[in-house]
Image 1 (cartoon, rainbow, N blue to C red):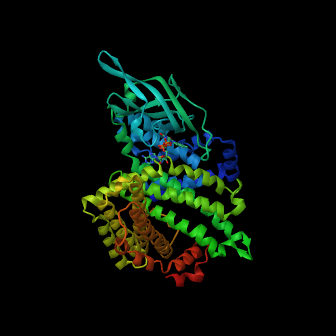
Image 2: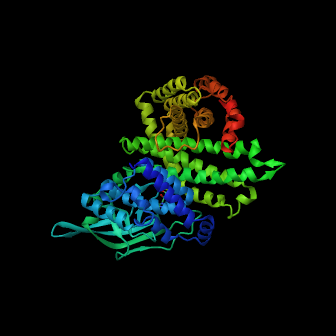
Image 3: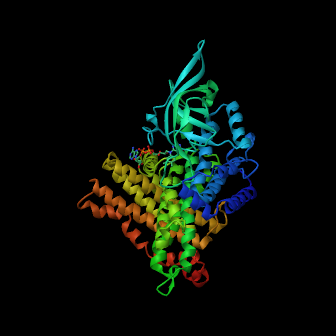
Length: 558
Ligand SMILES: Cc1cc2nc3c(=O)[nH]c(=O)nc-3n(C[C@H](O)[C@H](O)[C@H](O)COP(=O)(O)OP(=O)(O)OC[C@H]3O[C@@H](n4cnc5c(N)ncnc54)[C@H](O)[C@@H]3O)c2cc1C
């Protein structure tokens, strides 16, 4: 982890670099020309210019050794600038990941030092035309090259699809099947038989180079096998999912907020029907406030997960998946709402929200799609439900009831209602064996993500009130505002889990007839409905904060 001061300096340098080199007009032009500004990407990753890649590299190899929290802060900032450029930097991080987690000490020294000192750009070659979400169906092969009974190298054949930096990287990590299973190989640009296609013509992130790769009898020495042992590839990829998914979560957050941060000031100046749009509740409470609540719930989950990873709790893959799912879905909704918030202007290139919406769209697709996230989350928490005989979320709910006793205004009681409902839905799913329906399994993933994020946000609102939030935590909102945001989100989460849960459990035949009323009660639906009281006042208050009208109403919202 780096010092708070160093992180602040890095963020400031990043902002200044973007202000000088990537003003809106430049971004719009590059987007229109569908061009990756390679020179700028190289400057960002160059040790004697911005050197942003140093943050991701451990100190022993010449980097700054940033932790998960630092990486989240930088990724959010990069996404606020441009998600295509952020993707180019992410690709170097992803590409070097198998090396960071699985390489031999010699390989780490060679490659990580080269990234730190030479600003080497990497690409991460996992996806194939027939192996996307299901990487196990990988077709690229790496055959052993033998000399006197010893493995001296590998001959790689196959193709890779949708590789970020594919046409511009200096080195690539390529996943290929060896006789002992999937393994990562380091392949340098220009190796005979290794080629990339023309850049893809994409919907968004048009400043990022994405290209297919082909490998025809590409020969590499044995020391290019990451870790020196075959068959470790999928484990090495898994080992950092928590971390890398946090990065993409931060992209969703940064993308969503950068769109809202254009819509919010716009609405204070745009006069319609005699007053600014920002004064119209039907506008703010539909297009702005709910998106802020969802994004901040996602942020709470990222920040908690980053703290836990930095504290050594492991790679936290499920938590990374929840953070990615919440933030990227919220980022998409926020960007879409921002187009609506700008009306016809929002639909043009000039006002940027249209570009942001196209850019942020990728975040629910790469590094594991939202549906794969739902599956990952659901499978893990389903096990927790079974192992604890249905008590897992009841216990979590009790923790939030206890938090509510200490901090009654943070929405902890509402988070408890969401978790309680989740426990009941899961139990009905177990009794009716409903996870045989894949749709129920994936919906459970969504409800888990909502209920747990409501808990994270309530916890963070309480920590902020106590002045105990992480020193690098985002402080855009004060304690009263974060508590109101938490209440808004937790009401949505509780209602979603209970009503969607009821809908799908009934829809799959898990409950019916006279049983429905009993299920409604066990879900806590009457309490969840009663808990919607105060929603409008909370939304009014958050709108006041966002539009800097707090003085008028702060007392009302306390
Ligand atoms: C711009 C861009 C950059 C990328 N960069 C990289 C990179 O640098 N390196 C790299 O290796 N890859 C990269 N990717 C690939 C990306 O990770 C994959 O596109 C993604 O994992 C999905 O794989 P797929 O496209 O084959 O879709 P598929 O796996 O075919 O999925 C299609 C749809 O089906 C759903 N689906 C899939 N399986 C299931 C299931 N079992 N149950 C229910 N629904 C399912 C998915 O959620 C999705 O909605 C990039 C992709 C893009 C578009």
